[in-house]
Length: 286
Image 1 (cartoon, rainbow, N blue to C red):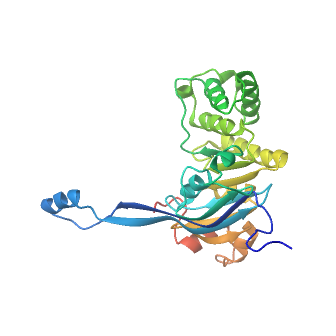
Image 2 (tube, rainbow, N blue to C red; image 1 turned 135 degrees about the vertical axis):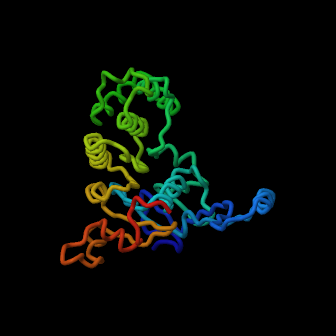
């Protein structure tokens, strides 16, 4: 018999009632006089932004969990909370049973993150950037170079260009280097924050195919935020739709579509689901 309060099973990722607030200067659309602007400089009113508001989710080992949301909806903040870059104001996040706050060092050893805003040493080559990142994790340079070449080739990256400076590579090639950097450490939890945004169709397909391979080969836990409905349908076992910091729907693609009325007699699509629930297109700013 299990003790009270102990979860019945340990998920790869378990988020329970997580909330994160930020304070920002209060916005106003009213036209104000110059002396009022001066007064505001010295006495700024603050407002609370609920970037993540009481969110819960659970991802089993070997699953890909998708999060769909417009810009500013809170999905990237949630990824930062899971990756230990931010501390939640309330709730808990566990990675393979370990708390991201109290066991942050242990959690970081089993996860890595790919962001659309990935940064590099632009005057160094992709090989030099990857070897540098691997050395931070104690991976020998020769092993890092071998693994980096192997991963980049699987992503469709021309190995002959590994010695070119990063600033000379296309946006798509740089994003492939970012993914390779995350995979050098063989993470069991992979956080992909809009990994294919801005990529050309060929690069996008290469990255998506590699994500599927990682799941199959490693039985990893993958969390994917995306604007791409087709990408979400192709990759995700379960999808959550986030709006104004809250999950407003969760389920498989089939479940989400089944709950949405058809449009003019045609079957609903995932995009129809998103618009029906949020009242906006996914590209819209908050």
